[in-house]
Amino acid sequence: MFRHLNKIIENEIKESNLDFYSVIVGTKPSVGARSPKLWNKVYKFEEKKIRMVPLDVDEGKIEQLFNYLKQDKHCLGGAVAVPYKETVFNFIKDNVEEEIKAIGAVNCFYRLPSGSLIDDFTGTNTDGEAAIEPIKRQLTESQNLNIGLLGYGGAGKAILAFLLRDFKKKHKIYIFNRSPINIKDPKKCDLYSYPLNDLETFLPHFDLLINATSVGHAESIDITPIPIKLLAKAKDTMVVYDIIYDPLKTKLLKNSEEIGLKTINGLRMNLIQAVLAYSYTNHTVLAKEEIYEIMN
Image (cartoon, rainbow, N blue to C red; front, side):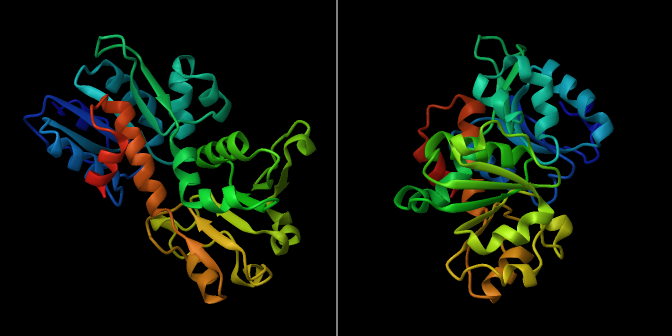
């Protein structure tokens, strides 16, 4: 089943005797990605001859890989990891809903439900919904929070979309990116954009800081998007939320705890987005609550 696929990817898939398979696509999901373990728990529970497999793919071969998966009747779809969320979106943008077009990135792709397994892929983005869950109580019960959002890639766009959908005008949101984004009528939705260099000016006013960049991930474990000297300027009630789950405690979170700030890691977000993505891809009869319990 995987002979041709193995010629495209960097790693090797050895699974056999499967009816279908799902995938996680990234530069190196074979090292550290939790989705295969989580999804495969549910496949075993449902007694399905399906497995999720990690596909390590070079940027120059991502389009070739996606075209192959699209034509392979055994592939159900799957998850998309950094840095391909926007790339895969561009492959399927004609088949996604308007809300996803506005985000411009997907972390999950699956077959259009028209009865044929070789139909086009569609996709969605579960990052935003999953990321909001660990901080939903704070966002719901508080008023006029100053929220700093670092990064405006696939995850950052999804998080922002859900913040604006559910908490527009309730809180002020400040996006910091390498290059500022263009926002129409910023005061209308209390949304502002600045280059990363301006973070020092605003950090002392934040109640919640969300890192939606990949800085501090396993491949850059000794790097932090915010130096500890700058973090020390934050008020002592600020919550630091890093959506990275590998490692569980990034340098940003370690530094934050060292100066007494409350922190949240990305483990729960990762679990929730896996539940949502599994549900979309596999058209399972299991409720999301059941999938959560199995994966957890």
